[in-house]
Image (tube, rainbow, N blue to C red; front, side):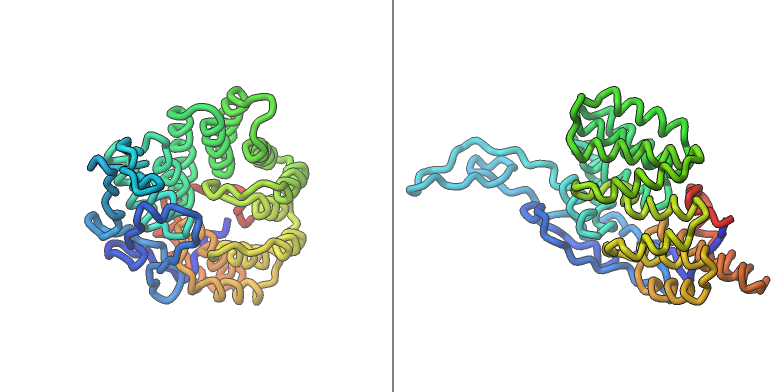
Length: 350
C-alpha cells in the first residue's frame, strides 16, 4: 500500500468564505460558487465552520395568513390569495442538499447537522447529504451505516436507492458481507421494472462486489458498460462508474490500460480526476508524469478521501526514489489524514 501524502494540511476552526447564506428560494439547479478553504502550500482538507457561523438560510417566508410557508401568489385580477399555506419544506435540509450539489461541503455539513439536530428532515435529505459527506471524508463504513438508516426510514424507490448506495459504499471499503446484505435488501424491495437509475445503481453495486471477490475482469466490463448508460449522474454516490472501471482495471494489474481509459473520461470539477491520473502514472512507472499530476492538483482544496489519494501518490513517489529520509517525511505528513480512515482495497499500491 502506498502510505502517502501530498503537501496538505488539516485545518480546524475558522469559518471559510464558503459558509455563506443561500436563501430558500434559491433551491434550484443553478451552479453555485464555492470559495474553498485556503491551504498552506498544498492539499487542504476543508474545515467545518464553528457553530454560529453565518450559514443559516434566510428565515421562512410568510403566507397570506401569517404562517411560515411558501408565498401563495395573488389570483388573477387582484383578488385575495388563497389563505392556505404551503408548508415550508425544511430549509436547512434543502440548503444542505443544494450546497452539496453546488460543491460547497462546508455549508452542506453545517446545514445538515442543524436539520438532523432539530429533527427537521422528514424526507431524509439531510441524512443523505451527511452520508455522502462521510464517504468523501474517508468514512466509507460510517457512510454505509448512514445509508442503511436512511433506507430504514423511507419507502419505495428512495429506500431502494439508499440500500444501493450503502452496498456500493460498503463494497468499496471491502465489507463484502455487509454490501451483500444491502444489495439483497434492495433487490427484495425492488419491483420487476425499477427506475432506470435505480437499476444501474444496483448493477454497479453488484459489479463492485464482483471486484472485491476477485473477479476483476468481469467487474471492469460491467462498470465500463454502466459508465456509458444513459442515466443522470447520482451526486450522492461515492464514485462515478467510469472512475470505478478505471480503478478496477488498475487493480487487475493493467495501470497503463487504466490510464488510457481515464484519458477518455471527461474530468468533473474538483481534483479527484487529476489525482487518479497521477496515481495511475505512479503505478505504471511514469514517475515524472505522476509528480507533474500531483503538482497540478495541489492548488485544489480536497476532502479527506481525495487527500488520502494525494497522500498515496506522494508516499509512493518517495518510496520509489529510494530516499529513506524523503519517505519518512512523506509518511509523517500523511499520518494525520490516513489514521482512522477506511482503507480502499482497489487503491492499494502493492
